[in-house]
Length: 334
Image (cartoon, rainbow, N blue to C red; front, top):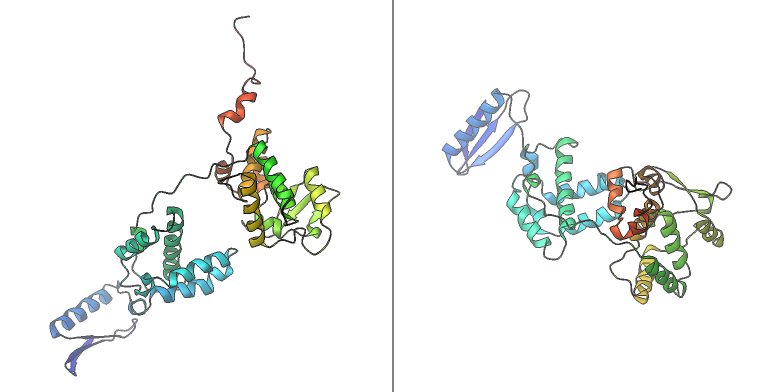
């Protein structure tokens, strides 16, 4: 039953009912206190009451910190996601409590971030906060409204997938620029990525003990999708691997230095709008043009979802000009 009493000029409501937590609220007007008590008791009688008191005192900032420490910390990309969360923590949207957070707050955040970031990046930040909300409700048992406010915010249309693959002439120029780089590992790291389609992280983590020169294969452990992957090695790749025999890792390269010297080589070769990760797309495209099936390409590239592989298979009409006449057709004129 609810108890309502006046104390220090305010009306205090206390509701005690078996099977429910004790509820305490304070109001300035008696009528408001009576209405609140009646509404809560009705919800309890109908067994539909949910206690949002914990969410009321919890800000989005507190939620994201908990998510970073307990969920993000166990992910492969924890460093990148932690950086995103740390950036969010400095934004004013994190000052709102979970119960006062509304879709218009999220739209304000979206408009602010869109001034300096592309739609795909902004969408990722919103999805990250949305997943933290869902985790709090489903995993941690925080009593939150059924409607996730982030789901009410429409995502901006993202740019189409990158469509950048090196021509043969560009690739030659890039290798020539890498060969004269002050960074000794650059040319081999670029060529190995082009020949195998391996991700940058997989290449930099590759150890000599992961290579079987007799079988001409190497294994990438703990890859992005969570599985180990063994790939065949072309002769040119084996030649590269045999050159580096000292230290635990084949390519004793720091990611930031690789990026820096790769950008210098690109500029020297006159190549624009190209990233190291696009070397992976070059491999996929070259393999498909060579007649590989999508299943064969995915076995080497590590794509579990073949639909994702389509993003990398950038085969254009001009790439097929020489192949079109190889199709056998019946000539009725003879």
